[in-house]
Image (tube, rainbow, N blue to C red; front, side, top):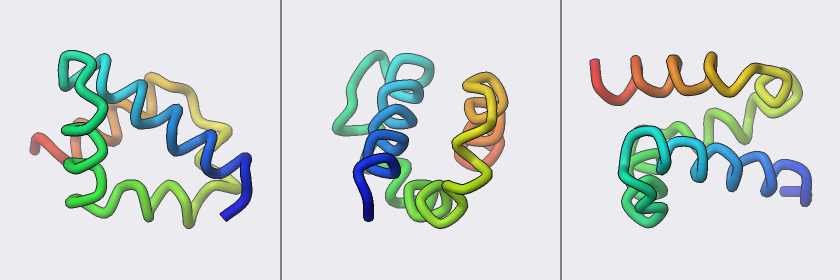
Length: 66
């Protein structure tokens, strides 16, 4: 995994931790990992890194909390 993909995954963790988990990045990481979302965003980096933060949050919310 290259540096750009790692940075993107850290960005997703930070974004979700602020939105859904009161800033707790450890819990955020565990939840995203459990639901396969980190692997999903790693595997689809070529397109997913172009999405808006709002879209990513909506997508993650639908997959985790629905």
